Length: 65
Figure 1: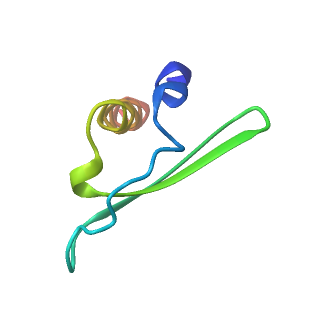
Figure 2: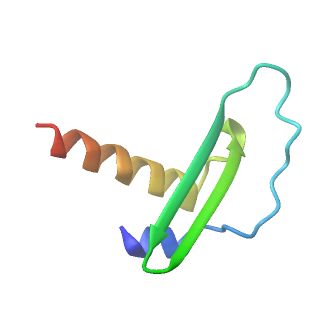
């Protein structure tokens, strides 16, 4: 999962014009002393972001089984 965290474009600008009442992802990751945060509209969750979210979901499902 660390590779997915490092691959995510934490410093990239996102288009905030997602429209009214749209879902927004708030993503926070910490490893060692580094902490990253991002707030993304649903339409921006693609590529590395989608991969990271899906991996976290998978890990959560398997840890609760």
